[in-house]
Amino acid sequence: MKPRVAQLDELPVQACPCGETRRAFTGLPNAVASVHLVDIRADASRHHHQRTTEIYLVLEGTGSIEVDGELFPVRPLSAVYIPPGCRHRAIGTLRLINLVVPAFDPADEWVEAGT
Image (cartoon, rainbow, N blue to C red; front, side, top):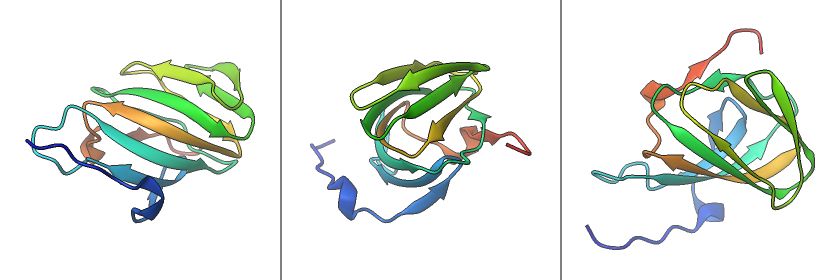
């Protein structure tokens, strides 16, 4: 596989449980990770992944990341490590980078009803 470059702010916007995302490197064969630019809306849905580890890196805004019912306050340059199986969501108006290992798979996203 050869190196790839993605301009995150130019990728197409997609809906996600947290608001809107722009995903890079999700379609590469054998990709070990993907990176997403995510704009969180105030009513993000609680969800989890069975196989995926995520690292949220806050770029803009302040709020909280809820992980398994515990709230962690975040601000620019806060990083949050979310292992597989942890129920999580972002609270507030935030822009963040989401590092996803392995690369994002929509079949491994489980959204809780009513959140």
